Image 1 (tube, one colour):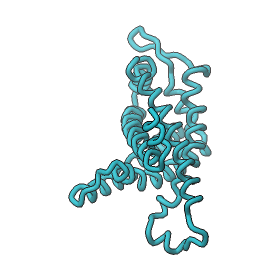
Image 2 (cartoon, one colour):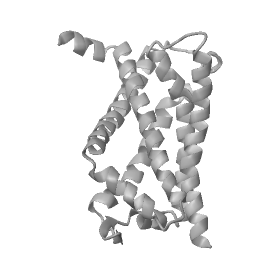
Image 3 (cartoon, one colour):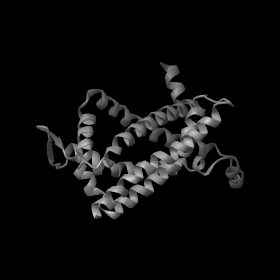
Length: 228
């Protein structure tokens, strides 16, 4: 197994882990935002609460959630390692102007963007994931079956202007992060082709705008509907 250790500890191996975990997290974001769109249904949270129970009790989904946790941790750890390696290998007197010409702002600040998103993720997990598992959550009944009323937790949280503003700002940082990370992951995996790479880059730009906007629209929608 020494070759595995050597590969994963090499710069190429670390980039490979970053790419694979990044793509998995992109898939997770896609599923997460799709399910959370039920918040817009206007049924008092019934569909969202049923969906939330399925996501927290289905064995296959629970297994995927553990993979997600591992991917987040791995993505963060290896991003820190790669950032430090890049800094240490950068020649003294490296021209900032040359760097700005050869790379995008997002690629130069992936470490900072990732750190901000990580801080948001911790707050997000505490506000919703922790509350769902160990907080005092009221129950509702649909067709004789009890469900945790997570919809009420979400709507209560997003009646706070600071929470809404923080969420929207975090989604802006996520958009910036994805704008580079999406295409970069495919490039790291060697999926470069003059015919397909431009399409991947366009898809990445669309994804990096659409998904964060959908996420950001949820707290905004809940805040203004709760005020009416």
